[in-house]
Image 1: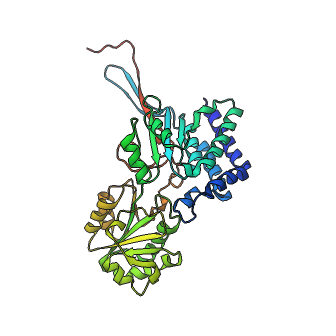
Image 2: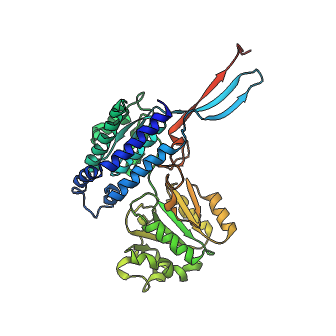
Image 3: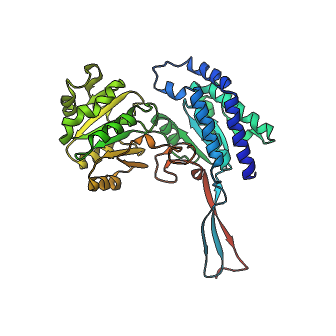
Length: 396
């Protein structure tokens, strides 16, 4: 398929999303009616006109990006005259398992289609109607362009379909689970096909002894409350004990958003009487290392950057970590020591996003070390092969 046709199809899908906003919202309303609005997944499940317009814009952004295919990644000529070229190619068939995120349906299709991959989708039952509406829309556009609509296939939202997918060795080239830790662990433990882990985000921000209070207030507020249900949202604020006197003003903006704080003993004492009592409680050991996906923040007090790094190593998930500091030495120490896909200095973790990184969209945030790491955009949807050109050479 030509790059021109791929772009034409993606723009047609974007146009169709805009044209069928009412239909997509109607299908989404059926799913929403079966979920408690208090469920942290409700926000992820919900589509709005604004979000659908953003989805259409994201598809157009992917269409406008350079093709990731047939890129010459490396070239060299051996002493015997053989020409070696390392060239990007599609994986082939990508399977994606995801939870209540109907926007993922469009993101995955756009990235897979642009990168020359077919995609098999396994959404959760919570978003069944929304996903069916989205895939039906995509298939209709493909058929109008004379393209086999099976290149995007939505499996039933059943456990049996999940088992079939994870056992499809020889049929699916790679599986990407996008969801919480429970889903990712299940896929990793049961898959007979290659897996790229994405999604689980236990995110920490360390407010250093030399952190700027005003910068810290903006970062903590944005990282925690911009959208609490996403994987880059802040879960634990680590504060240097030398800055406990600044903890109350650091957290004050969170109270206006109704954020419940679960603080360790020293942090609790610093906030007691200065933060709404109904929103302040003592932390338990289980609160550290929990992805809350809600208006809840844990606070841990440390006496050094070493303790902060130890906390992150023990409780982080390898997703995104941040430090607020004006000390260049501390910033460099943090960058070099934290083992995560994305490491921030004086910026919120809310920027961990394929669109924000200029990738157009993302299929997920990879937290593993082998293969893609961080936001997975178009280039991460390809592998490579070696092309070797000779002129009759033989090996001695």
